[in-house]
Amino acid sequence: MKKITFQRKQNVIKKLFIVLIIAFVSNLDAQTTLLSVGSSGALTINSGGTLNVSGLELSPSSDYTINETQVSKELTAVLLDGTPAMEKVYSLNADIENFLGTISYNYVDSEMNGLSHDASMYVYDTTSSEWTEYLDTDSSDYTVTSTFESPIQINQVTVGAPNSLAVEDIIAMGIRIYPNPSSSVINIDYHEDLQLTLFNVLGQQVMSSNSKSINISNLDQGTYILRAKDSNNTINNFKIIKR
Image (cartoon, rainbow, N blue to C red; front, side, top):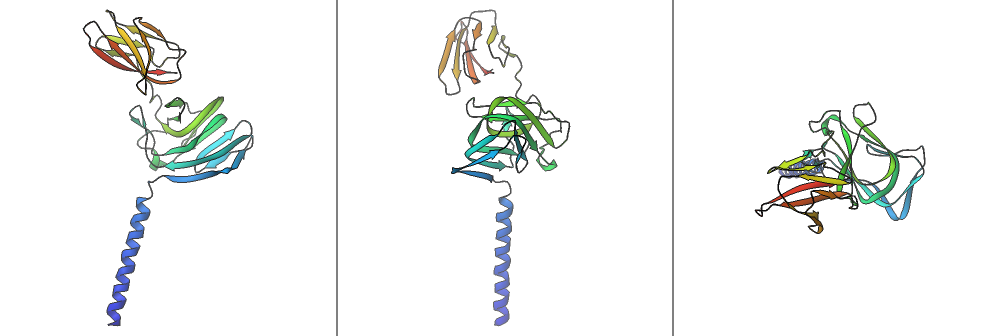
């Protein structure tokens, strides 16, 4: 009787151990909180210093203070205009604003997701609601580094193939849109008249024109949809990126 009881205990322990292993493995790809700065706290990175948050290095060009934010890491690949990035993205629950200095993203083979070491850094901010590409300024493998001499806002950081966000001149149904992205003017090349309407990502109309040269310099940076309607009421939609 004692022998049977002991075997049952062994079986229970084995089952419990298996459950713990499954729970641990299933949690490996979950989002991991790396750093928390509470509402009553502040973290200052001195000029010349570096904050390394599990492979994400922030080196400000002058003293920089982070207030009330949480930095997390997720071992998954975001899509950059449909192109997969590396299988690691750092996220902040509150944007780091007006950052000046250097950011380095360190990675390992298992996170490369089929990409080569020829890669670019991509930063997402919630103001423009888009990713922006920054070229790698170091020659080392397993590290992508970018230096920012103009203030940037940071919500997420990842690494992907160069030009993942590049949008070529758009040609559809004989309509050509160029340049795209643009910071000032977009041109529409078509042999007939068009009614052109520009919408933001919320579906709100921001501009309407019959001109085939549209000035977008006063618009906020981000992604827009250009609707082109011809004389037959045929409608084509184009994604426009304002730099």
